[in-house]
Image (tube, rainbow, N blue to C red; front, top):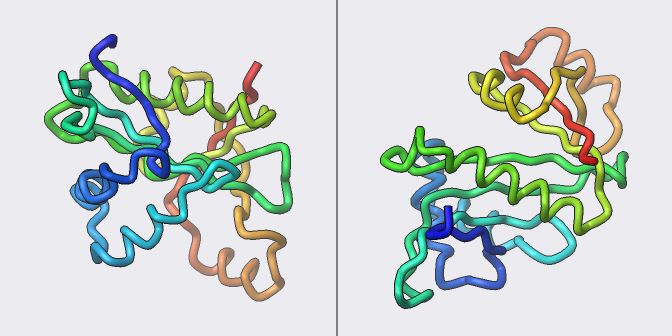
Length: 166
């Protein structure tokens, strides 16, 4: 894995369009909306981390993956990891695991010890990394009565998982 690095997007803004393309290859969205979301990356969360394949010139490195760490306002010692993706041609090489482990290392530097995420179809992958299934959480604050009733009427296929970082 020496040929790969995980760096903060806001400290490497020249990668923002490439990062946008990697994420949109998995979850299509308008480029302007995606760029707006990526431009919010900062030191204090939310933070977008990118997995790059190193080249001779760091400016020419290739973005092959992304993860985003967001705060959970109602749980200040926890965070939510989202938008974890590896470019299709780089999958099944251990890079998703590498990206997640580096993401967890970054999270620990913030003094955060509980990580949450949700997935539609990667439960086995996250289980192998030590994540366990948990009840759904609200990353935007407290549930309102209206939101709770909507959730009950329209259940999600998402599986929520968490991990305590040691």
